[in-house]
Length: 311
Ligand code: APR
Image (cartoon, rainbow, N blue to C red; front, side, top):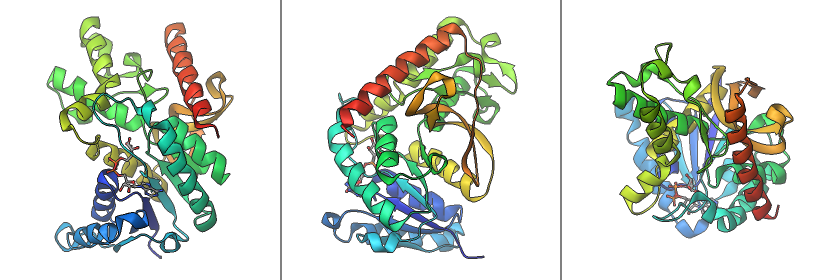
């Protein structure tokens, strides 16, 4: 069978890491794209990664380009095109500039890659995935935003650190928009099936919830230039793999809501099943009144960002 084609739109920090992980997992042939102003940079990054495959064992091709024609017929697109935030900026501060970039990407994707399953990473996430979906008109099941896996992964890390246990034993769920109003759900966190609420005090859990919501900002402040890229790339690759290998994993992702959880016509983080059908199902769970109120607040925030895009 022919190898799948994976188009990575944006060859910056996350794009490069995505290309490396896709090659290491032999997910498919990778085409790393960036704008013509970057000149030969995507080609250089791709060649460097390709030269790591004899050692890593990845048996795929990796190429770089500044020409959308080379992306034609991609099976998967992962979009990181855009500007990352600087210390002191929120994700929302990026809305104007990244809306322009996302509109350009969406027009090209619609023309060159009509069958692709698309994972959007650019921020502000929920608004950017909305813009992409609106302009491409792609089916809602084939367009999804990466945020919940990353936020949950951060929460899992903090829980494991606090308890001195393996991260692989810890599950966590973060719903809502990818921003300050995200909704970490301690009630749905566990360690090897043991509810987190039986293992940690409310104060400790509250501190982890806060650190999770501030997780991206903590990295931005430490890096000083740019934002997180290793964990975001790993999270998106889990989603791409779920699609390409029909894994049917249940994870929080920014999915198009058509009445689920009482919201309509917007993208926001909810539990979904990811498989060969893309977003195969949105899982609706019963929320406590407090959790629903927090999700409503997050939805309101996402709505105001979507409005700010002007799309
Ligand atoms: N098409 C394709 N790529 C573009 C476009 C465009 N229209 N405009 C800009 N880019 C490219 C830039 O040239 C740059 O190489 O997107 C790349 C972004 O890379 P970085 O600046 O390194 O940013 P990165 O850390 O990868 O984050 C990208 O993801 O998490 C979000 O907030 C983050 O919105 C940001 C995005």
